[in-house]
Amino acid sequence: MTDLAWIDAALASARPRAVAALLRYFRDMDLAEEAYQEACLRALARWPEQGAPRDPAAWLILVGRNSGIDAVRKAARTEALPPEDQLSDLDDAEAGLADRLDEGQYRDDILRLLFVCCHPDLPATGAIALALRIVSGLTVAQIARAFLVGEKAMEQRITRAKARIADSGVAFETPGPIERAERLGAVAAMVYLIFNEGYSASGAEAGAREPLCREAIRLGRLLLRLFPSEPEILALTALMLLQHARSAARLDGEGQVVLLEDQDRGRWDGAMIAEGLALLDKAMRHRRPGPYQVQAAIAALHARAKTAADTDWAGIERLYATLERMQPSPVVTLNRAVALGRLSGPEAALDLIAPLGERLDGYFYYHGARGAFLDQLGRAEEARAAFVRAIGLAGSAAEAAYIRQQLDRLSQPK
Amino acid sequence: MLYAILCYDSEEVVGAWSAETETAVMARLGAVQDRLRAEGRLGPVARLMPTTAATTVRKGAEPLVLDGPFAETKEQLLGFYVVDCDSLDAAIEVAAELGRASGSAGAHEVRPLMLYRPGEAQVEAS
Image (cartoon, rainbow over all chains, first blue to last red; front, side, top):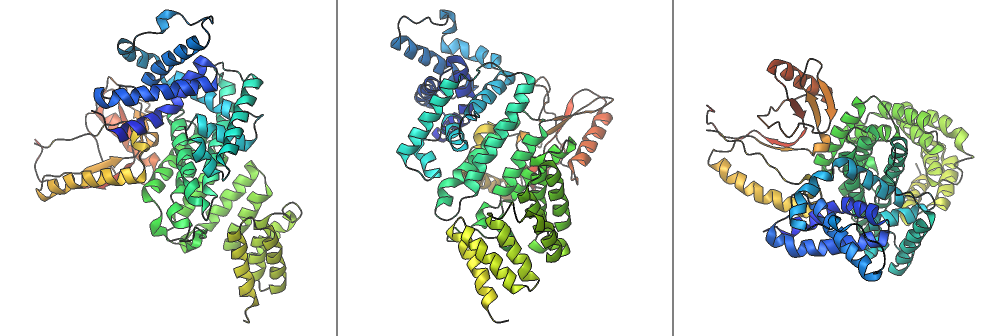
């Protein structure tokens, strides 16, 4: 007797491995997906009575492969088929199969699958949608909800992405070491994009998008099991855990963003923070710093602070300076300026961002931060001008409302 | 006699539990623990972080530090320590020291704890 909730979770966690292996076998996304669905249906019929197999993923691959071959056979009776001995009987084959499907094979299969989904020809939204459908098995309706589009539109987007990939003749061969390293970087970036899609939501969208964060963390953990010694994968998973640990505190009752310094730290998830810190610890032992590691280290300093006032701004400023050297970007500099403002005062922060004005002129946070620094210096008129500029660039009602508050405060007689 | 009861399950499955499932399972386990505690029979209870948080220190003249739980399957779990360390490096140093002291083959897995309760049982292990 196996519990249905256990089976659901087992099917969800076996999915990337099983679909990846079926894709290698059939080289066709739709066929691989259908074969996997069929295998799941059979698992739901068999496992509750007979118990789950030793290796659920291997079982699903074997059953999926056989049912996929049946489907192909029905569709085209003339087509050449794999040799009959590969269509072995399940019960005796399962144990041996589980041993043959070693971690190395899984690793390449999953990486290939993820890489196919983040094909450079696809727009980022298409790649994310495809990965969520194929790798994570979210329904089209769930994905549509997360991206706030209609189900039909999302269906089309995914179909287009699949067609684009089918046309592009993506290599299905096992990636070599160099290629694998490159793919892993692209895959990590996509996982983080999925996380950010969930994390950046606020208001009414926040609830619908929250599962994206959990899914991204699950994918991070999956990559980590396959590549236990990649510091950037350790760090990426740590970063997502440390950020997601704050989710209960970072939105208020209306779903509006609560600034880090105003959050009730008692509502942060201690277990998630502990795991994030442990993974970051492991990553740092490799002495191979990378951008995810630096970002995770910044998140860790915030997480370690018992109160907002305990925050190690000097450490954070140093880490942003490191990130600036690794990935120079005006946005990173702006973040460093915020830390520097806490550390050395608003004047130093203003000096640091002065050269960014041209490149960040259309960026909400630049004018918002600049307004705050000017305000702290008592330069009310300039602060007002900066806030007015920020309001014009606000991306959401919540952002606009926040700046409006600052403006109202400026108008109060002192 | 004291008995250690070691928990095994699919980490992928447990890791995919929703917050509600997690809470429900912990509540059911908590009820069993409460009864044992009331009877004075409950020793230390610990929950380990996922294996992805593990580091393995293989014994040897030059201890080898590996990411992940890489004890070979022909090796059995013989016991465990709970040590308070400031950093992973410090914990690895302790594991290496234990490895040197044991003088045999094998490995020590360093796994951060997620939860630790010292327990009530007063029985002397033989």
